[in-house]
Amino acid sequence: MPSLPAPDYPDDVRTRLETDAAEVIARYPGSRSALLPLLHLVQAEEGHVTRTGIRFCADRLGLTTAEVTAVATFYSMYRRADGGDYQVGVCTNTLCAVMGGDAIFEQLQEHLGIGNGETTEDGAVTLEHIECNAACDYAPVVMVNWEFFDNQTPQSAQRLVDDLRAGRTVEPTRGAPLCTFKETSRILAGFPDTRPGAVEATGGAGPASLIGLRLAKGEAAPGRGADHVIAPRATADGGEHPGEHPPGEPPSGAPGEQASPAHPSSHDAPQQTSASDERHPAGPEAEEGK
Image (tube, rainbow, N blue to C red):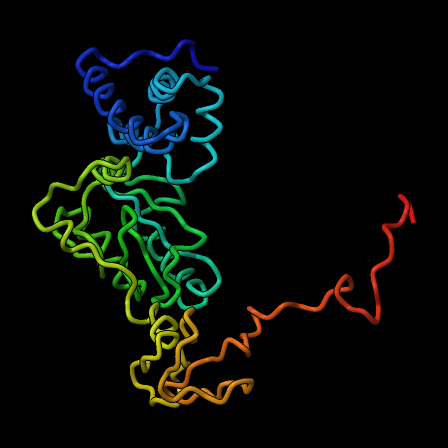
């Protein structure tokens, strides 16, 4: 067991962190809600959540160190040990794995000479496998400090980590320019990214992720004809729309056709249950054990 209590931050560091923590806490009606960003804040200081950082968060929020530790150990985004400047996460969940994620992870382990959760000797790269990077449309996906590198191969992933270790500039597939793990943690704590052009470069979901939304809006998907368009629903005011199908009839799916309020879609329609089925009325609740 480590000696208690945890050591304190140096006076200048603590004063700076207290100012930042006060700004974070002021965003929330209940101070406890500020725990996650405060953990990012202390992680930005030392590159991982130390015992000192846990004590600091507990003191600021009126919590016990046990309560803070329970949260810090629940979420994998908080490091409990020192790591590299670049956290390289390889998705090994089902789709990414079969598309090459497993091969990428094996290649990087062999190339870097480290295992899962370990860091290269130069302190540049920490390697980990991730259950899902939430970017299945671009499988296999690698993330560096939570920025996307889509459609990777073992060869491209190896070049990526080599560039990171050599200090060469690498560009994520989408989103903001890459920064170090500590800088990323401070941004996740809710402080602005002041790098020139970083905010403007921040991107959202790519075209592959937005096809369903485009179809639902009545737009044609890239490379598809109008016969693939899903008609938007009628507006809430019940007004007439061009191309609206006859009342009471289901939509045919033709472009521009509006769904009628009289014919809700299957997920809007009330579902038949035993309580609403007159042919099989639900009886009184059975006694316990029957």
